[in-house]
Length: 304
Image (cartoon, rainbow, N blue to C red):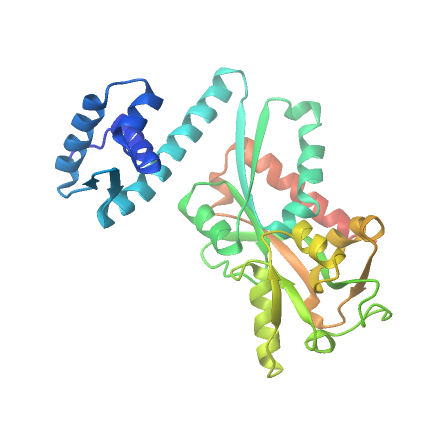
């Protein structure tokens, strides 16, 4: 297969999104025949039809759907390359990309990175933070799309170098009118008679909760599913369900939202996070400095 042309891929994405060659041409300010020619060349390059022409437009074939996913990833990568190189052209002498889970992002990471960047010695360093699920954090680090990753240390860190980061404690969060609201602390088993607001099924918290419920011979009843902790707390505020959220995330919302936050007494509710990389010796100077800073913040949290 010959090298794929990025312009043709960009136009292919536009056609798939608009389901119309004419509309894509208008948005790209070129003639439709030019797009049609590029699409024909693209189909010839990959050796299979990519679009089905219909009376009211076009739609991708199964092969086209697959190429669409890859094309979006390729263009996203080229945009990151352009941004990173542009940063160097603008005088930024260090670029570090970190992938981290929702818990880490919602708790301390932003503050720790801010403290690092406020150091005058680091004025020429740029840090990109991206939130991912734990498996995607590890995949990104292994594939080299990020210098550092931070996730729960119970994740499968095999093949990566890792060191401790911070820790948190999971808690039950309820509305003040909830039957459990008068408790000071409770174990997970005490909550399974009530409905939950859940996070994405692949999130580290949700996977762990489902596993612990199964060990107890129970299942969690999910009433509402959301994508992040703040949305979960809003559902709790509406008194629709209870939620399991890191105490460090829930505490700032407790007063404003009128919530009860009760620590879980289960051993697994105390979690530690890990910073991982492929090879510390191979990190850029900027990434190495940031890694050292984050380790220092973890040590400070553990110190009396």
